[in-house]
Length: 512
Image (cartoon, rainbow, N blue to C red; front, side):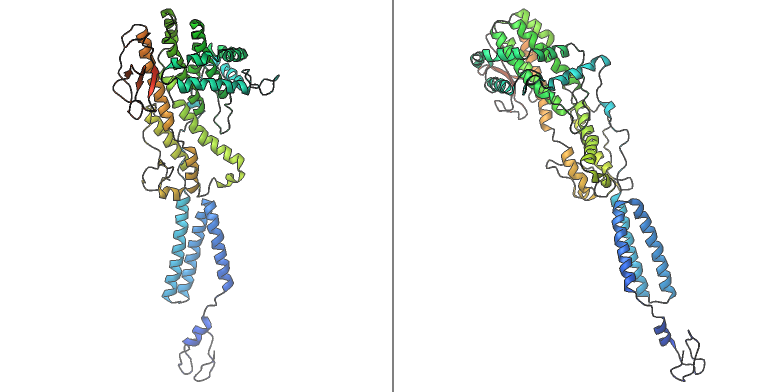
């Protein structure tokens, strides 16, 4: 290096001229000025972008990325300090590295999922029947088969035209019998030939009902998946309508004992199916059949042609409904298994790309399942059927998270904003997985109240003492002699509204 003052040559890296003492720092600084390579910055930015994307897909990559950037950052900072760069550049580099590290740490925390549910519900938690009753399920499924010899005719022997006619006649019973059951007797009599003709067509299906009634229990072995076949319910419901209409007709034709035998046989099947029913739809259809059978039995009680002996025969079967028959626990556990195990399995089958979404931060499976489990446990608690299940809800957050508030879905199907941010895809799935059960609860209570009302009428017909104390919606059941009904005001607590739960009374036969 030549000295600008004396012109003598000095060794490289010399800061002071050994000949004249001239300071050579400026030239040295210019010589040592680092070269900024744009392509290196672009490469670094590209690598950082790719690693950020990978961090969202794999927590392991997140950990490795943070470690590599910290090592790289420390290495670069040391080099900057050794090269005697300004403190501002050191602070800037350190701040950028800190911001990037914080971002990556937040990504790691965001993508953490809750722990799997310990000792979760399984199929073993559903009600099981004895080996001797397992055959009943296959017999029950036979109601869903088609007649191989006749097109468009189900195994119960009814064409679609037959089903439509029965449905029309049954609607007379449902819609017009609310005020008094006896206002529609003549209209049903006018259809007696149609009812009898269709009744004869169902000989084979009535044999199925007879076989099922002989089992001590009726099994329901429906597997918990989204597309399980429960098509037998449609034919079962059609048969229920036909049994009810035929019972009315036989009572009016002077054959109450035969009518009682038919309706009690069908009611026996409905009661046994209700105990082990798994799918919510199966339970609802079973409860619907029980309600309509109670109403039909009430018609028999109020019929003046029915002797006291026949009433006693009817009373032997229509005992109070048991807790198992009205319980929803088995159904709720089954529905939980369907929406958790079933939904996840079906999503994986229908959308193969979902296999790659199991570990992405947008969908936390464990947290989603915990919200779902909490919901169904809460419903079991509401109806008093928790059966030892702890009231403590499962935390839906990772263990290292602070104790945040419980996560529940509101009446609009929405969740807390911060849980939606944490689990955006999971909350969308939960809006599908968590059904509104308000109507289900009401139907259960309606069945229990109706059974209570029937018990009062039956005891009165048998000459026993009765108690009008109500178990729900009012202090006592109300007897309206003008409308010829005994009723409960229903959920709204107001008499003579649409939600009233009522049964008719023939005051010539039963006096209150």
